[in-house]
Length: 132
Image (tube, rainbow, N blue to C red; front, side, top):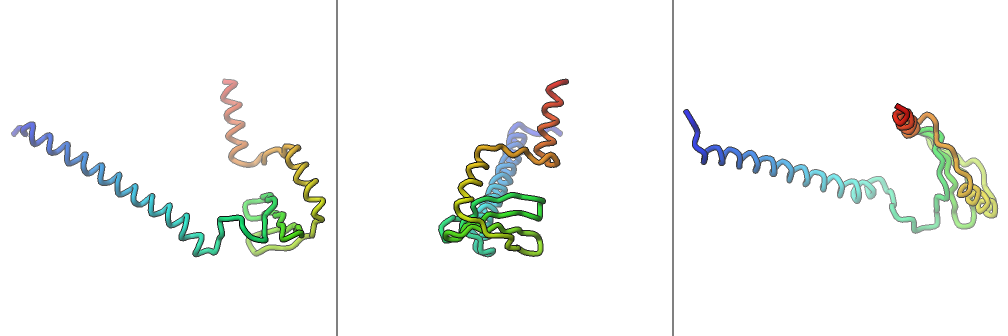
């Protein structure tokens, strides 16, 4: 039993329409996820995305995935704070005139990347592949 060209065309069109419907549905899901993460999550967690306010994070240095050092400026005071999975700890206060020196040295000296990370592994693989 042979199908007519009209039946074949209808079959192809219904597959295309189904494909477009799936793409539209995925687009709606992605758009909803973006809006939820961008606006809803910050309100639920109390995270402010704007930097307006009396507290400023001057610098951040990740020690391990769960341990980080922060230079936090509140008004004219600058503090070194360590965070871990159990909480935050005040380490020391830093004189504001020293912050300018620290930031200037940070801009002039390039800190080598962490040799254990994925990016350094990828860089090593690229340089190895160039030699082949």
